Length: 109
Image 1 (cartoon, rainbow, N blue to C red):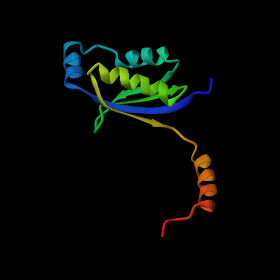
Image 2 (image 1 turned 30 degrees about the horizontal axis):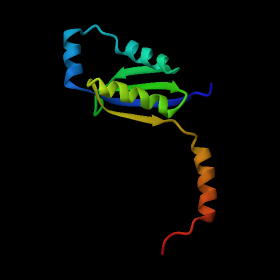
Image 3 (image 1 turned 90 degrees about the vertical axis):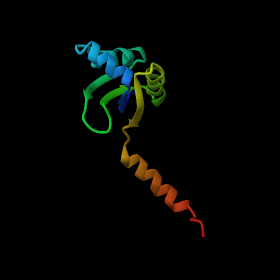
Image 4 (image 1 turned 135 degrees about the vertical axis):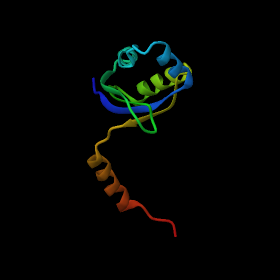
């Protein structure tokens, strides 16, 4: 399988924080690992962080759609908000394509 790397980040809702207070020992990394396995993916790391997001995960998945399916499911639960998915890319491939586009593009004006 050709796996792609994704950086996933987001925020917990008040409902999730209530769950943390009720059960501080819960393993959120294991929960992420379980949902990734359900879609054929793999977790590299999962961290609760300080800043404008509450968590950052580095994962492998077959496609953006697989990670988007996870986003839909976890945000529908009401415990995750503002989930962003960033896909790692090969900038050289993008630059090669940009070079081709630049040769044929006519700017407005």
